[in-house]
Length: 125
Image (cartoon, rainbow, N blue to C red):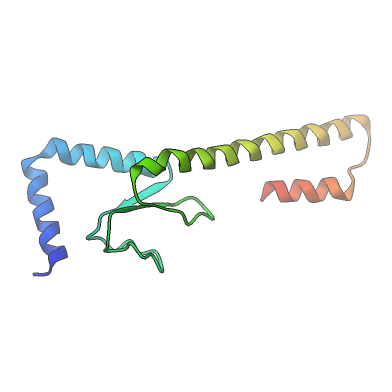
């Protein structure tokens, strides 16, 4: 029996012995997932190509689109999450201002310039 199979078997037994601890593990895991992260234990292969921490140490991958950040501790989680929230807020604000500008142009009967259309397309991406 390899070490991974042994640890999985042991993990199942511990879950039966300590069900509350196992439940809190899943609750934390679900919260990480909602926040855009996936945690991997050192005995797990994370499946990310060229991840130097896979099967080496506990680590957390950011699973948001176009982000390849790897966290080594949960202490880094909040600052990285806030970074994404700031970017999301900035993007939402830019879309709002662009919509306002387009609506004003339409109300004033002013045709949209090619630059306005180009910017609108870029913001939507």
